Length: 209
Image 1 (tube, rainbow, N blue to C red):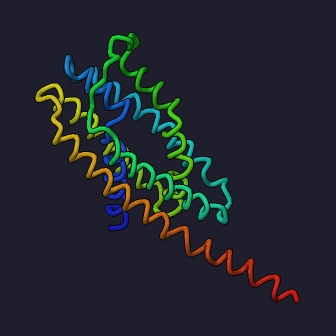
Image 2: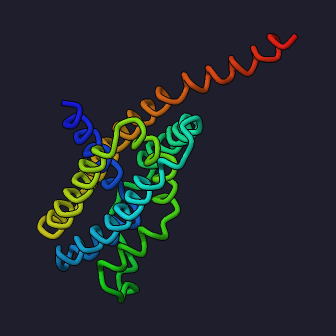
């Protein structure tokens, strides 16, 4: 049951992060209008970047002292709250007007965008490490599946039906709710130990008198 819960949480988180309108989804939509496979390869390139950061987090996240994790969790909560707000405030569009400038292979375009995206890097530093500590590596199985499902289905549906304003708004709303939930979860995990540190710091000088 714990494994299933972890996979489900990872799936929802991956889906909520992959779905909002942004540069990667704009290019996926633009490419998919002509050929859904090209659009999907953009997304899978970006997913490969996520998996690269995921491996680094799993193997090197353990080097971070346990006492620092609550602070990272708190930063992750702030970052997720900002992502939730940004997803709600962003323009409800998946259009892209610079498709002709993309002359490279679709997969490597997505991979390069993912590896050089500061928001993607920040997410793994501030969110990925606490996820490994609190929920274990199993959450990333659902995370990868959620992103992969979005990439495949979004590319295929855009090629077949295009993208409506109502669909874009529904995606924004789903992402806002899900990201807000995980932001609150991170604050819930981070604030009690931080509060204990503050209380302990305030009491220590008194006990030394």
